[in-house]
Length: 366
Image 1 (cartoon, rainbow, N blue to C red):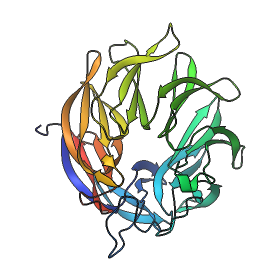
Image 2: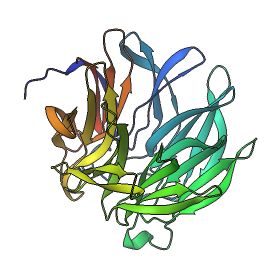
Image 3: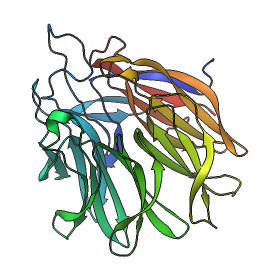
Image 4: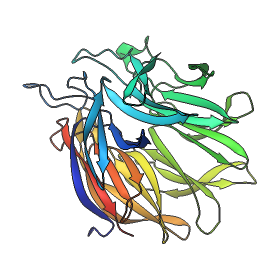
C-alpha cells in the first residue's frame, strides 16, 4: 500500500522504547520515552531479556524534529504520563522491573515534579510489574491510576491488582483497587452522562468501570482476554459514540454506545492480531484511527517486524487506508505541526529482537 498519509521525517534511536509522551513545561516542548532494557553483549536476543537499569529519555522539540535534552533514572520504563494540578507539573513513569536477570518486579514507580528547571523526584509508589499510569479528574478531584501485575506461576505470590490513587492536596494516597492479574492500560472518558474508566487486562477480562459518586464500580465486560488499549471517538455526523478495544490476539473490535441499553454493543470487528496501542486523529476532512501492533506469535518465538494500520472512518465503520512498518510497536502520539500533524511512534524491538531500535516521527498529510 503506497504511503500517502504518513511521511517519515525523523528516526529516534532508543532501547526498548515503550511509550511516547509529549508535553509542554517551563516553555519547553518535550517528549518523554521510557525504555524497558538495553542489549547485553553476548546475550542471545530475547524480548524479555536485557538489562533494565535504564533511563527515561527526554527530547526537546525544535520545529518538527526532536533532539536529546536530558533523562530520568527510571529502570524498566513502560510508560510516562504528564499532567498538571493547578500550577504544578508532574511526570509519572511506570517501571515494570529492574536488574539484568533474574529480574525484580516488586519495585517502585516514580512521580517526578517540575521545579522550574528540571524534574525532581516527588513521590514513589510501591508496585509490581507496573505498565501504565493514567491521570484523570472526576468532579474536580485528581486521580492517578496504575495498571500492573504479571500472572506467571513463579511470581503468583507477589502479584498485585491495579490501583487508583487520589490527590489529597499534598500527595497521592490509596483510593481503590481494581481486580486484575496482568493489567495493561486505562482509558477515562464520559458517555451517556456517566464518567467511565476502562481497564485492560491480559489474562482476566477487560472491564469498563463507572463512577457512582464515591468509587468506580463494574459497568460491563469489554473483552474476555488479551486486552491492551482503548480509544473513544464521536461519529463526525453526530451518530453516536464509539469505543475501540485493542487486543493482542485477533479480537480487536469497535463498540457503539447504545443509550437505550446504557452500555456498549458490538459494532465492528477489526481483523489482525498484535494490537498494542491506539490513537485518534481528527482533521478538517476526516476522522482517523491509528493502530500500532507489537508482535505476532509468543514471547518465546515472536515476530516483531509487522505492519500497523491507519484507518479512516467511512460512514459507520473503520476502513484501512494505509499500512506502515513497525518493529515491536508500543505507542503512538499525535502532536500539532505547522504543516500538518506529527505522529510519534515508538518501537521496543528491532526485527532481530534486539532492544536497540529506532522510533519514528511522521508528518501526516490528509
